[in-house]
Image (cartoon, rainbow over all chains, first blue to last red; front, side):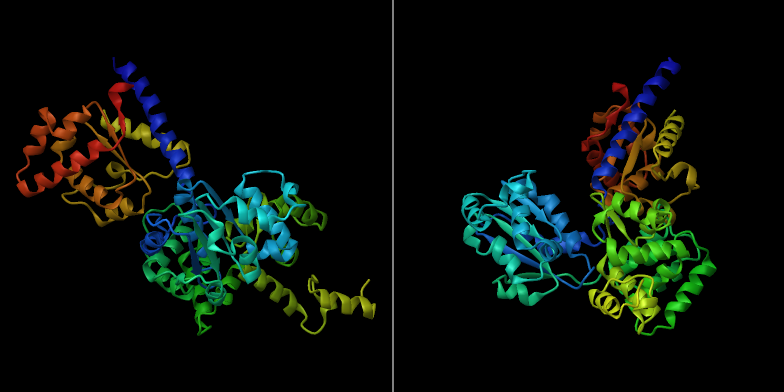
Length: 374
Length: 129
């Protein structure tokens, strides 16, 4: 009897753990752990988005870089898109548009709206007319993430009349004026994380699975959070850097940050870079100069060719939150990209030929015309 | 029995790489819920409540349940271990007697409310296995 009971228990146990394991996966939030501070954002946003009124509404989510606009938009999208007939999330609008032009952006948009794989299908038709015509009677939910020019809005979501009753369109941007000039008056401003949430996010990275803050680290954590100024990226990078380090290492890191009176974000990020070994530093610089948004396999191959241990290097940089892998691509946050490029420039400010890498086309042209590079 | 069950459960979580916090092992059970346990409850993404036949006899368990209901409203998984969930919901039979046996009547009211809510959440019933 006892034996039988035990055997049944083990099945039950497997089931319980499997269920939790599945739920943990589905609630994991791509590269950001947890959803800290989300409920307070939702308090404001939910009424703005609510589809009780059947008007067509455009809403702006506005705030400085890396403050969490995309995370909020993704959360809304995941929560609400199911209620709409057609929906799509367009990430990195700025990037796609700069790189491939606005027509590609439209093609991409239509592919997603119609859930089609074939990106070429829309290359020879007037996308604008299709967008204008086909969604008039559909209740749509569209997120345009990181928009930086009016043109992008005009080509995709020019007028509310293009979309059916109850449609909701969300635009995230750093530029408030852009929203207002497009007639978007509903604007939610994303502020930096308040102290408590900032601490929570930081601890998720600095202590990972530890549920309880280890003794002696409470005060240090509060200090670290102050340096990161409530900016999620800085909190993640600093937290990852301090993970598994001793109390003394924490103290010396924080002492170093103390010498910069204005809690300069770049210095916070720099701490993490300085903690890398030479190989990892070089890989980071390569990625920040050339490989942002490139396929991981491709980046790995090229770095291997340059004589770097790419596999482990990329893993380490990911663990340190300096890069993220998503959809098979290496991505680097723009603040870090900027930092990497600046570091390269500083290697030899007046003499580009002595730098490890050259990424600025102007510098390259100058050098080639001087013929001083072999 | 409950102890064995919980330790097997704990091992399985461990095997799957999921960090679980065990109230009966990691903490000395005292008279009241320690701040450490409260932090653990708050810091957890899921709370698994194993309700055994003797569950309601322990004021410590019931107090812990109150805390859990307060903190992790949406992520509680009740496991009814050798006990009828409807007895838990309606506090019938020996389970009900155990709840009533505590002297602090104000608390008993709160506990009953929490047990009712707990039993309404979909979970697992060991008798089905």
